[in-house]
Image 1 (cartoon, one colour):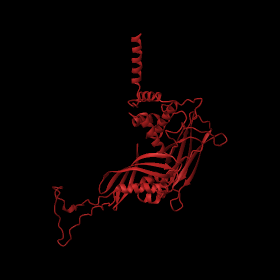
Image 2 (image 1 turned 90 degrees about the horizontal axis):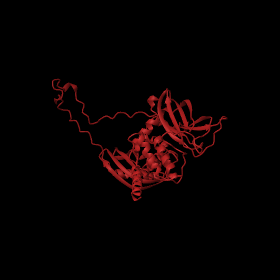
Image 3 (image 1 turned 180 degrees about the vertical axis):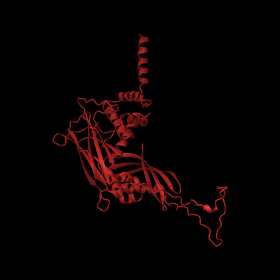
Image 4 (image 1 turned 60 degrees about the vertical axis):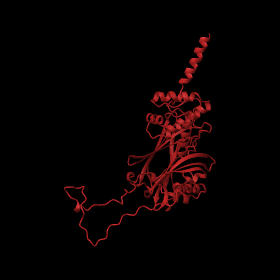
Length: 399
């Protein structure tokens, strides 16, 4: 009897020890098995939130097309990660993409399964009954001349009569594809949680000028429910050509010496041959070194965050030279830009590296938006020397 009890306890310990507490993305089978093990150790509510987090990361946290490619990219992203780390990553991705989701909030996206179980369940909030999809578009923003800076694209699920259907608590994957002359220019995704979905804000500055034909674009929006994927296309939408993205001009090395071909020895092209010069000519001057910034790059980042906190957005914008932030209108947008920030509480700022032309600064701070939600962020700011002043040239939120 004692021997049997010992074997039973040993078997239970062995079974428990085999369960994984981290993701194993060696292949799809180990990925699913390890996630199942991790899920089994959670309470029912946390299981739902964990599945929501995985869905957020698979849909918005990786760059891939199609479920198989997305699943593989997700595995690479979370390989070796434990549940708390995955939840934190999903929080950051949701915030970056403007999705109203938080790991600490109640379940809100229905029953999610990243491994593709699309069968409707009795309580499936993603099984929305609709007849079709409608799209409304309207220009937004002002470039200073009265012309728009972006296009707001709002999809709605409608019934047979064309009226919006009512639903809440869903997590429907909405995808926007932008084309011009049949060439895809961009793809964006978001979650439609109810039929008050704000849609997509397509900034003209994100579209490459070289690929936009006749200043017109076509858009296709799809919304995926449990039973069906609805799709709608609009063609011939106008854009503001003055704001389209133009590649930066190639940098010219001002210190490069252009050698006179007349003084190159054809038998020894690498040899230095003195050229015949006018004895009365003045010797060439050495190019001046770039003006060294007097201030610490940390001061620029600190001033930027303080100005954002005080809603002095013009001063914050002027302290940067970051093409990814686009125009001041985009930067200060009250929904998708820094205009949505109510307060910034800085915890730490550190200079990672600095030379005469560039610097890297890390900052840890809490951001409170105008709805009262506070998020802790770790960000890396890239800075460049512009005529002796440090300007923020890049911005990255770290996991």
